[in-house]
Image 1 (spheres, rainbow over the protein chains, first blue to last red):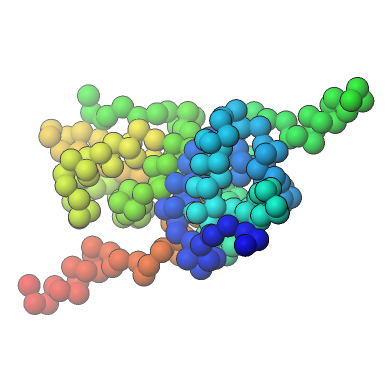
Image 2 (cartoon, rainbow over the protein chains, first blue to last red):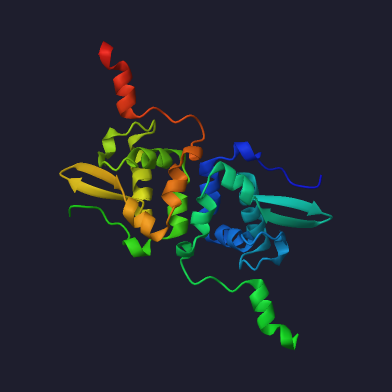
Length: 120
Length: 120
């Protein structure tokens, strides 16, 4: 098995997707994945326990929001942008829109890494 | 008091709104209110107990999705379309969009009434 079970593109359910997105931690994951790059689950700084983090990744995957690829013991997660857009046009854009941020967006890891890069 | 407490337009929170929308019964309420008309809570046929229905109306109101106006013992509910659009542009349209229906959309009350009208 190279990836974990997930719903087909055509069987994504709106309520499940909305429910998956309706949580601050899961919304953070989705925002960080919105750039399009695949990330390992461990690369997120979610401020929750590993078990809680795993729960949130599972909810996103089972709702069809994310795709999880297995590579050895590593889990690589990516956003199912095309599938979501095909099924619920405009939803992801609205959720990720500039107005949709409750607080100022956290600096991206890349930006944060860059900020400290000279000394590391 | 002529209306029940609800969050200000500028303090609507995306996760609370998504959570409120992420339920089939609440999504049905929102869809039926999307035409813009105010409805009494009792006019919805939700297929759930009165207590459960009240719970769903409260979740929608507390998330800022709906406005509830009191008139005697009656509760009139309406969608906060403008507030939602101002805060999360495109979200409501995406959720209510034609693709967003999981199954064939249920016939509207008006259409259903019309269908049986000749014989009643």
